[in-house]
Amino acid sequence: MSDWLISLEGTEAGHDLALGLAVMAAFLHAVFGALQKGRHDPWLTRGAIDFSYAAMAAPFALFVVPWPEPHMWPIFATVFVIHLAYKLLQAQAYTKGAYTVVYPVVRGTGPLFAVIGAYLIFDEVFTPVQWLGVGVLLSGIFGLAIYNLRYLETARETLKTALALAIITGLFVALYTTYDAYGIRATADPFTFLAWFFFIDGMAMPLFAGLRWRNLPNPPALAPLALRGVIGGVIAFMSFGAIMLATRLDKVGEAAVLRETSTVFAALIGWLALRETVGPRRIALMALIAVGAVIVEMGG
Image 1: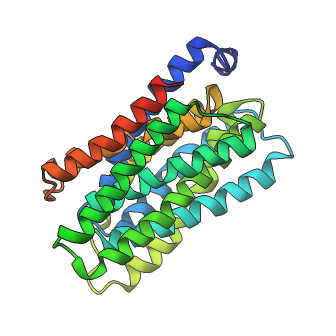
Image 2 (image 1 turned 180 degrees about the vertical axis):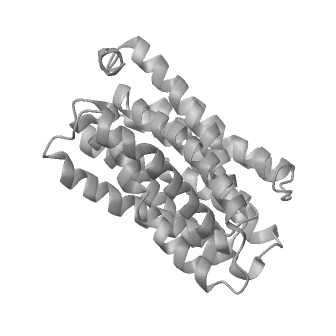
């Protein structure tokens, strides 16, 4: 399968596959975010998810895929640090604001910086139409942020903090998107990178979650949390794995922007599953983010 995937790099078929992978990653990442923001403490949920996908990845990393080349170990160390900072920031943002407030800003801020990073690292250049799409996407993001600041009543006292954390988290989304693309391109077999990424990346958050669980006055039962962790681990494989493969097959900037159609899925999940009030104006602003992503794809 690795040989087949590598043969598609830079081809029209590879572009089409990358498009499908990016959209799939968008939907699954919205589900992933809802799992973390669900009824369990987001720190505990993230710890359970990370433990699950590290355990699932371990046998593949150790016994199935080719062993990483020596130059990959510093790359894995950097990836670990970047993703850990992202997860700590995101968990803190979710404790301060509603899912439909935090998620669109996090996912929408990332593409602008990812496009810039793709230009600096991979020499990718956007057309004027694609930059128009980025502008439409950003107008939806900042319009949503302004709307939330003016009208949202839930968790009002922590709203500004939640938005600030969301923007900073978005910067780390761009950083890990760009650096992950660099990492998966630096190894001969992309599945080596994926297996070792999930194995290494899942080691830290379970420790934070374990300490938090012990210090809670009424810690939740472990069985439901573990089940959510297993479900989240499977979704993480499919979501993060899909976007990483997309960035190897095609342009990093386009994949990063297309993934942000997840904001539309997030709005629906927040309304249907989490019972959060969304409203037509906020839905329209979230849809504007998705329209911007579509313009980027069509203008390429």
